[in-house]
Amino acid sequence: MKDTFSLKLPDHSSKRSLITFSSGPLQVQLLVPDKVEYFYKNAALSTRLPSTSRHIIQLSATFGAPHLAFGMETPYNLASKRFHEFNAGIRVTKPNFDGSITLTNKGIILRASYAHYFDHEKKVAEAAVVSRMLSEKENVLVVGGTWIMDDKTTVKAKFDSRGKLVTLLHHKIKPKTCIKISSEFDPKALDRIPVIRYGLSLS
Image 1 (tube, rainbow, N blue to C red):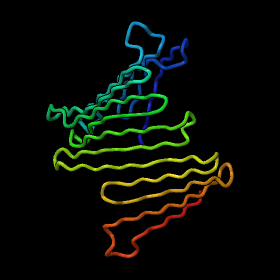
Image 2: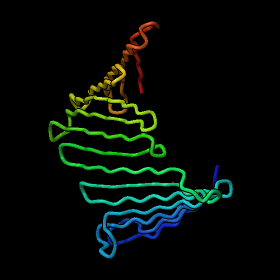
Image 3: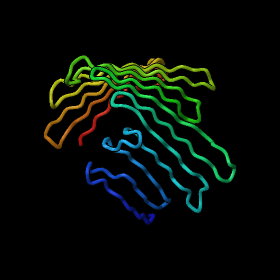
Image 4: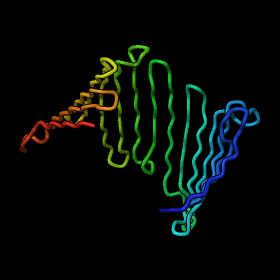
């Protein structure tokens, strides 16, 4: 358990906090609401100061427009005086699709994702994710889809470039009770039993 202390300075005109201070370790955030014109109105800055055990300052920033956003984060080590890793991403959002490109894991993994919605209620959708391991020069492709049949039943499926097929059926029995049935087929496990795996959960 860690003790935490927080202090928020609210912006009463927009009901949003402008500055947030918290400890354990100390963290400072600056959120700029839409009504503030002296700074970019769709931006956020954050820094996390190190505790006594770790000499790392975490820096992150995001900015963008209603349909376009860019974000980045990087930790700075005070002991070695170096940036050990860098993560960045950009996302485009439209009523009928979402797309993003991210660079993560110390710049090793480059991932591009795209989701397309076939109706305004977003009940039928398809998606594709391409991951590129820059160090190993390996690509992984995952395609999938979602079908929301009604308020109680949802069907999902995905297939990756390694040949693994996964399906999921989500059904609400009651407002707070749902059942999930999943299946997985891995062609690389043909020498092992079982080849097809099933799962059942009740919550």
